[in-house]
Length: 252
Image 1 (tube, rainbow, N blue to C red):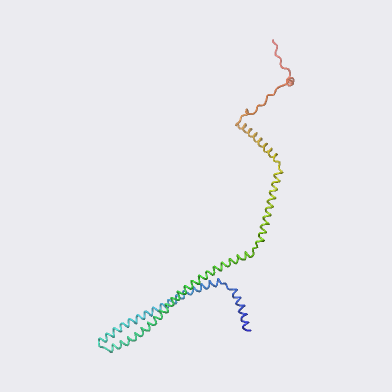
Image 2: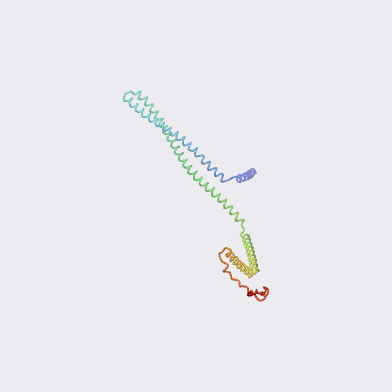
């Protein structure tokens, strides 16, 4: 019963946590965490290198003391002072033991430092690899979001309905075009084209007459060019109205 209750709790809280998780943000944080470890690794390497340098210096000091003590022991023996030679020999043995211990410590420190350097190199390679994989995964995630949106659009896209709407609208446009063309044809047929031609001809004649008048007024063309009007003849009736012709004066 208790196990079932725990499974129920895990299912509830696990689902809630999973719903709140953002893989892209978590990946970015993981990359930042990996980068933050690099300065710590470098700091530890610096400490290890410093300790190794101290051990190497200590080993060199013991080597120098050993060389000097050996020379003193030889000098004391050559001088016949075995007591002094024995004292230097004891000190020489102590320095040699210390030198051996320093050498062991130096070798272990050097081995640890080499492993730390190798660890850093492996870590950097792995970190770069993981960062590239994470960036690729994030790019693929962004692409998948776009693809999902496109898929939703296509899922809600009904070709049949759209085709039907397009065909219906095109048919309506054709009908409106046909009606407009019919109205234009009817309007043209209802106009008396002969009357229009006559009006146009009359306008042209009037324009020619106005042009001739302007030429005469402006002195471009003389009035003599106009057609002369026939002189009016006087008939008998007109003469009687004018009265008898005057008679010639009689001779004096």
